Amino acid sequence: MTQGQNTPKDFTDDYVEQCFQTWYVMGQTANITVLQENIPESPDGKKPSLPMLRQFRDTYGWLERADALNARAIIKVEEQLVNQKTEMLKRQAENAFKIGELARNHLLSDGFDTSASAVNALKWAQEEERTVRGVSQMMITISKMTPEELMQEAAKLLKRNSEVVDGVEIEEEDADISSDTTTS
Image (tube, rainbow, N blue to C red; front, side):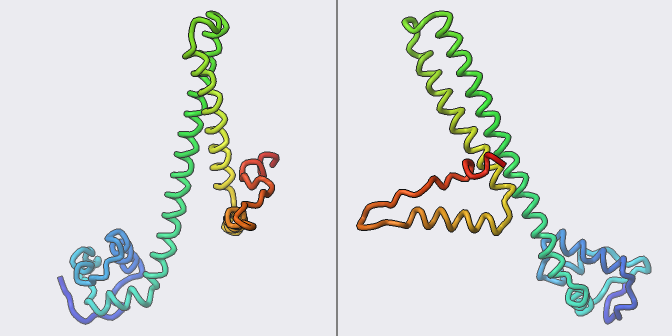
């Protein structure tokens, strides 16, 4: 393997891309020596020198590309988290509905006198379903908002929570996100 002072034309664009991908997968290491140890040799058996790798990084915009890729990765992870949370909330709402149905059926078949727990289960299930469905709808609504809409909503909620006159909170119209968008 040949190392030393190379020129950019000693390496093809495909090889430089391979070096970038190795650097990116390694977590965008700042240690160029470690990068050099981990990149494969070029088809003609060469590896770029440390200054050449730095030049690749700077000339080919590796840092900017990594920032863009990292931003895309974060968006995908956040979307996945929102989807997972939404699915969990849907399952909780479905379970609450099923429990409510069981409690209702018990009350209809056995009457109120035989099981106070059925009444409690029905009440819990109704409250849980109402709460979870509201949170689920809010999560869906928030996931569809643009960054500007999210900032406006946050500002509105912060303003509402901070408005106090003579120690008494001012009552405003409901700022519930789900109620603003359920008609859309």
